Image (tube, rainbow, N blue to C red; front, side, top):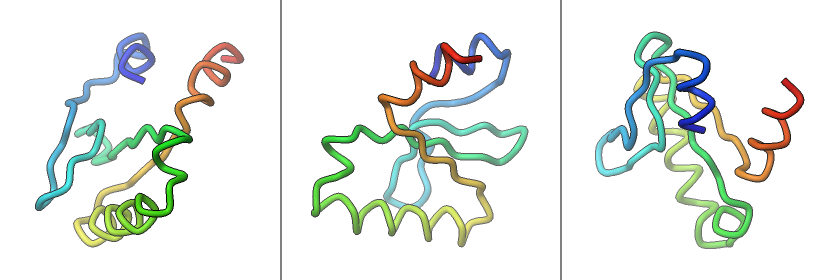
Length: 80
């Protein structure tokens, strides 16, 4: 994801913290968080409630949140 953002010239920071949760990327220009979800980890039953907490936390703090599956990044980027 970092490579894609770099190639598009989008300014971002990594590991943006809200309360005690970290998000993979933050794009300040659009106040957007990006989470890259690995299918193995984020499909585990114990991770699903944590992702829901992060969804609510982002929304409650007025961030846009985009979740991208890791195996879709390369596929979609090749199409573009």
